[in-house]
Length: 106
Length: 189
Image (tube, rainbow over all chains, first blue to last red):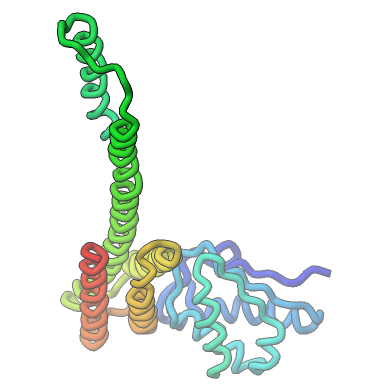
């Protein structure tokens, strides 16, 4: 069986927003609630990896990344997140290190 | 066509034609015996004339092209970050919401600037300017810091605070100075 995949640009928005729902459209909070958390649950239940492709957007706010992935870490535990999540960013590899730091620091 | 060849060719042709004319129409007597030392001397001079530009002028011109290429990329980084700087300072001044368009512009400009720096970093490692790698790394670190500070605070639905505008301006000034220093040192190294 294949891993579960999310392409942020294709499945959510090519212009991800800021931190909270109140900050405007396509926020990190919205991404967490609508896409990241449900797919993460599905991946852990099925014993699969969750592959998140971060390429193809206009760019990311650090608030978006720390909110979405930090909340994932707080909700499911950093060990579980680190063992399930696979991040892809060919365009900007530093996004991966920043996001992993957000997960570990929570 | 190579410019030195383009300028040299008419002189060469003129020389050959003059030589033939003199040989045909001159009444002067020529010594037709070949002096090996003088022939060697002549060949040496010709070889020098050909090899010196090849080994000195061409590498110098290649280095200039490399420098210009990197300087142009550094200017692009600066102009992308300048767009963010203008947007942030203008919104802070008018106390307006950044809006979706302004927010997107900031994110895409910072993304472009960071991507451009990565290109410069890769390019400079393989060039004669690799001694400037540390300065480029420094610009990259500052731009990463700029991204963290600015995009942690901005959002489409809120105005830019004075504190953020101030931090942004200080960081932009620092990056601006570092890039200008780098351009200067690349230009004259």
